[in-house]
Image (cartoon, rainbow, N blue to C red; front, side, top):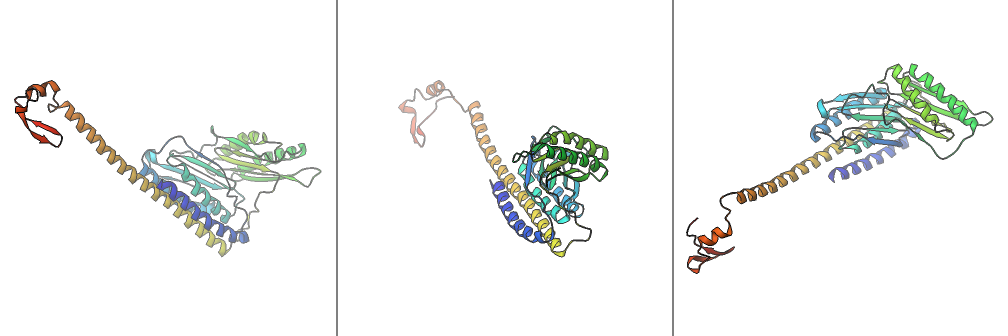
Amino acid sequence: MEQTASLVCSRYIFLLLLMGAVTLHERVGGDPRTQTFQLTCGPQLENNRSIFVQNFVVAMENISEQMRTTGFGQVVAGSGPDADYALAQCYGDLSSLDCVLCYAVARTVLPQCYPHNSGRIFLDGCFMRSGNYSFFQEYTGPEDRAVCGNTTRKSSAFKKSATDAVNRAVAAAPGNKGYAHAQVAVPGTNESAYVLANCWRSLRENSCRLCLENASPSILGCLPWSEGRALNTGCFMMYSDKDFLNKVPETGNGSSGGTVIVIIISVVSSLVVLGVAVAIGVHIRKQRHIQKKRKGSNDARNLVKSLNDSSLNFKYSTLEKATGSFAEANKLGQGGFGTVYKVGFL
């Protein structure tokens, strides 16, 4: 209960500060696309709470430093069954400021998977995954899927343009550090099909190509719907009839205001994760206290069993014989639990 309350409170604080940061950010940046599209938690529970939480917090702090400078990070914290392997990446059209904003949201949502020891989250601007084994080279898996928009059905001309845009992005991304975007006009209209394709930078070029080639048929299966996403183990792809892409800013085009926001969001997200860790620590101590109480009750049950099994446990017939059928002559007086008798023999 303490864990849930602290997590909710921390997220409210974070969101309030994020709203203020985004207001300033509109003057200096694009769209960080912080909408959480899918959160998936693994089936296994953590092995040791204290070690798991400590490793998770360390991993989040280390990966934050990498995200602020490169928009990508991977780290290993700890060893054994509670080690934390973490990977995070922003999509290639996000500026440094957009990336920090998107990652800050991902970092505060992923702890909802606790006490499960793994999870992955897709936002429309970034991706994050955490687990207890090295998954950095994985590019396909059973959870790969396409998610289709269902607001508007498009024409066959849009379908053809979207297919062309997807194929262009898939062909270009592996040789371009895993990222590509494409825009193809729809003939006879003022519309275009927009596509983004992005592999995680931990993949080799060939693995990136295989991931995107696996994702493209599934996302094209969304047509003629106006929007579709491929959420794959090693890559992300999206097409839309709306221009959702940011224009990547020129190098050195940042501002001091943007830097301040980056610092604010980084600090706040760190505090949120720390708050979650503290809440989990309180939860652990409470559970230990409860277990001690339960252990005490078990000791009481064991004592009763020992007494029942010991020579102090007499049959009624034995007591009747020893007290002379509870004769008045053997009565010593009245105790708190009834009449007290003198025993002639045992």
